[in-house]
Image (cartoon, rainbow, N blue to C red; front, side):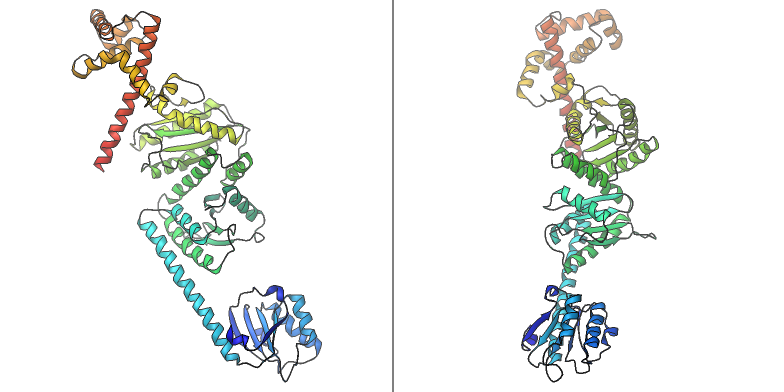
Length: 532
């Protein structure tokens, strides 16, 4: 600064500590001034009242260093023509910067300049803090939650942030441009070596005797700054208020776990990184096998964002609690578009027993909430997180087929099924042409006339082509069924007796049913969207 530069300053000791922040400036000649300091001060003195004995000068410097002085500025003149060697040696031992002024200056001018700079910086921090607070508040008013605040905070400070719950590990992490595995590793190191890993931690309070958790910032992209502390404090305050509201914690946990499972599905975490991330979320498998599961409602549209995040988060939280009573651990999170619940279970017992248990709880919860029905797709058991990824992906792909098949407790996505294969053809123009080629006459008949012959044909095949059983299922006289079957053969232009004909007609019926179910769901969704 110009006011100090006029004194021709020279650093004579402690040059390795010149990056120390200055909290305030003091002017003093009292040899006992150390007792009045609180740390972080810059002390300006001419040393007029200092005892020149080396031991006393050394003790004077040691006391200043012990109080956390930022630096000592000694003006050379009548008392000292140079900085005494005893002071230099003591300062070097403690790392205290000592600056000699070779020209006389007005200390008051230096004090005013530095204090003005400090106050201006503090005001700037406060203004930036207020701007950050307003941004977070706008997010909440727009319907965002804790996760969005954390993402915004990571963007503002340019470093990843982690929200941890006391005793439960990571609830959510906003990594920004940093790899998730690096953030998880930093958090794990922070847990093992509290105080030894560089970080900035801000407690999150929700009204209890103990802090709910901590908001932690890691300098993995850029060094920490004073502004980071202000931003973290503002964010922690709003997070505390938000978590105190109903369900926000469940939603945050479900979204945080969902983010981790999506990272596994997208191949961003290898087996070791995935295991560490799962442990950070409190999931430690007892066995050597895991069970990937996906649950969705019958209105499922892959990738279409829904408003079910709160409901799935609630299911996720209660699911963990209920399964824990049966000794089953679960890692549960909502998908990115909130259209499905992603699960990984500890397969310590039989696969079928675990699948039955989780399906019963999920289907029961969804039914009790009056939110339609749920399908549960269970993949094969996995021995690694790479296999978990494959299992979750296959379970998601199986959801449309599970919805289209007759109701069952859970759908085994590990077994190849005809409906699973046909679901992959959904939307394929060649499949639609095949259906029209086989069933055009029946489809046109059912548009305007009764009885509906497509339903009759499906019942006929469902009853093993037994005319007696089909007539009983349709509550028809056998003669009436004979007339219908004859009319069906007339409309499709083929007799229902050849192997190729029977296979082709059954295949066309299955594809037609899947296409029809999809169109009905789409129409219901459009009506729902229009109503909103």
